[in-house]
Image (cartoon, rainbow, N blue to C red; front, side, top):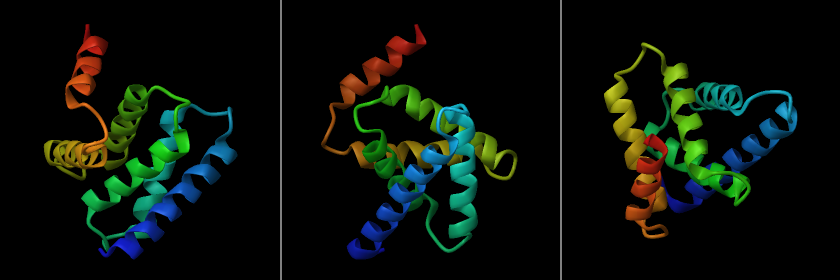
Length: 126
């Protein structure tokens, strides 16, 4: 996917996330919101696109929309849970999880310290 098309898709996700947040407002929990968003996205993209690229765009758009307002770790936990619920028994969970981790790492790329990210994950487990 060329850069121009990727940016258009990113703008589409940002609009979709913002619109979804306005509709759901404070009435629903974020997990339900992500499930709806992922289902809507899958319907629109159908089988036309690479799911890994789709997740990268979704994560980038989510980070832009949520900015500094929320705890990123909690946000990713919700996104992973919602993704697993939507994909249910249709896909291999391990492959799905690996794709999601790869996409997340690509998005964070050189912007964040991997060790700090791992430490925050480890602290949450304890």
